[in-house]
Image 1 (tube, rainbow, N blue to C red):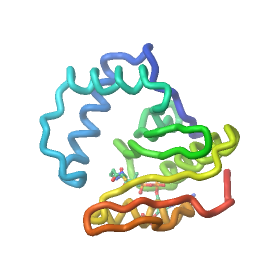
Image 2: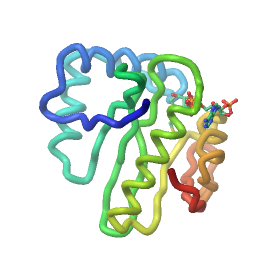
Image 3: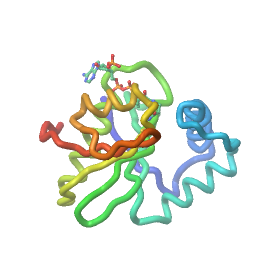
Image 4: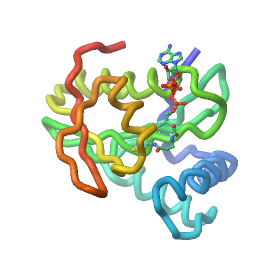
Length: 154
Ligand SMILES: CC(C)(COP(=O)(O)OP(=O)(O)OC[C@H]1O[C@@H](n2cnc3c(N)ncnc32)[C@H](O)[C@@H]1OP(=O)(O)O)[C@@H](O)C(=O)NCCC(=O)NCCS
């Protein structure tokens, strides 16, 4: 069974450590060079919780936290999906389902357009999003913006 758990002020120190571990893992792919620390991760999460335009969710599979997904920006008529990381386990469709849940939730809030941004070099992520129904909307050599153009919801 798969569900999303909102990251809020009840986040535990073990959960913050998990987020830090997962972020460290994706840093080379995301071309990030800053040092991931417990305190830095805690601050990042506090910023998300305090910002009404952002949301982060743990992806919970059979009671275990396996990754996270979120909204980078929520506006009246559009949103950006972001912070999508599989932290644990192997590709099995869970992350696809988690992003579809986000899309489904956004459309319930009357969001008309759903975007995300990715590094142009992140081919695996681009294919992952294309399989869900995102299409490249704006492209440059370094970054691209994808837009959801499929009505196949969960
Ligand atoms: C992008 C990312 C989240 C994708 O995670 P994932 O584990 O591959 O995603 P899923 O669990 O949905 O698995 C999808 C795969 O399972 C397969 N699959 C099996 N059962 C499936 C099902 N029921 N539904 C959908 N896909 C299924 C798919 O065909 C797909 O296989 P493929 O990789 O050969 O194309 C992961 O690679 C990641 O964390 N990358 C690093 C962080 C990152 O770059 N994030 C995006 C930033 S823009």
